[in-house]
Amino acid sequence: MFMTTYDFWSPILFSLEIASISVLIVSFMGIFFGRLLYNKQFKGKILLETILMLPLVLPPTVVGFLLIYFFGRNSPIGIFIEEFFQQSIMFTPVAAIIASTTVAFPLMYQSVKLGFQSVDKDIEEAARVDGANEKNVFFLISLPLSFPSIISGLVLSFARALGEFGATLMFAGNIPGRTQTAPTAIYVALESGNMKLAWSLVISMIFISFIMLILTNVIPKQKP
Image (cartoon, rainbow, N blue to C red; front, side, top):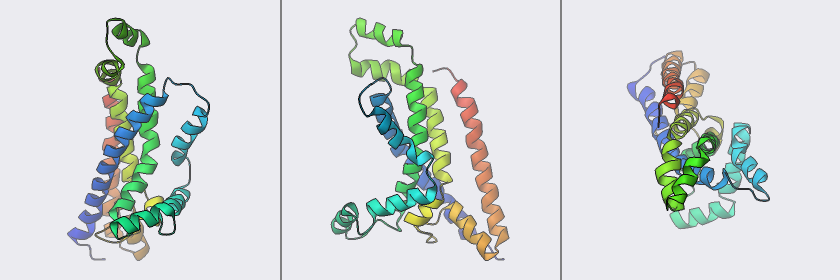
C-alpha cells in the first residue's frame, strides 16, 4: 500500500517528543522520591513504594483505565481541568504525556534509588563533619556520585515511554497527526494491511531501542 513521508515521520517524531517530555518530568520526580525515600524508615513506606512501582507490573489496559477514571470527564480532577481549560485532556497530547510518564516513572525511581543507595555513606558523613549542610551534601556529593545510575534511569525511562501503547491508546486515542504514536501507528498499519509502513516503523523502533540498550550498558561504566 501507499506510504507518505508524513505517515512515517509524524508518529515517530510525536513519539520522540512525548518520550522526551515524559523523561524530563520523571527525572525530577524520580530524583525527588528517590532522595526522599531511599534512607528513610517510616510506617507505610513499603505501601508507598509499592504504589510508586505499580505501573511497572500492571497491564497497560489497567493503567489506561485508571487514568481515564482519575482524569476523565466524570472525575473530580477531570471536571476541574475541563472547567479551567475549557476542554478535557483526554485524546490530547497531554494525555499521551501523562500515560508515558506514568509507565516510565517506576524505572527512573528504581534506578535513582539504587544510585543513592550505592553512595558511600562515609563520604557523605565526612562532608557533614566538615561543615556541609544537607543541601550541599546532596548536590555536591550524593547527586554526582549517583549520576551513572540517574543517566541509566533516564535512558530506560525514555525507552519505556517511547514504546508505550496500551495506556496511551485508551487515554490519548489514536488521532493521526495529534495523538498517534509510533506503536499505535504500527498497530493501525498492520490492521489495514499497510505492511510497508508497518515494517518501516518497526525497523525504526528497533533501531532506536537498540541504541537505548547500548547506552544502558555503556554509560553506567563511566566514572562519575
